[in-house]
Image (cartoon, helix red, strand yellow):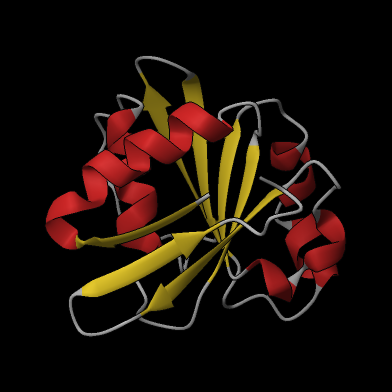
Length: 140
């Protein structure tokens, strides 16, 4: 699955990716700083009916949102993690195994916590307004 989009198309792209990939409960977003991971995850959460104010959990590591359509959503930002042990101490493992949707930024900072069922998505910056989101062929 692959999409090239601008910010005004992000809601449609988020809805499309969710429709095709909703069987996966853990989504790992790989992208450089400033690519739009938080913005895309916010669009996903809004699509799923989250009414809370959506923000990056960089300092909290995890934000929890209530969704009208799928229950609890977890938005994780592992940017500041120094080790997998720190993530475990923060309760991340329990959340990943909770059966709720978990959207993870900076998954490479604790890769061994992600199981084989994790959906890995890659977000690329094409230019100042345009992004490419794709799932590798072996996962699609």
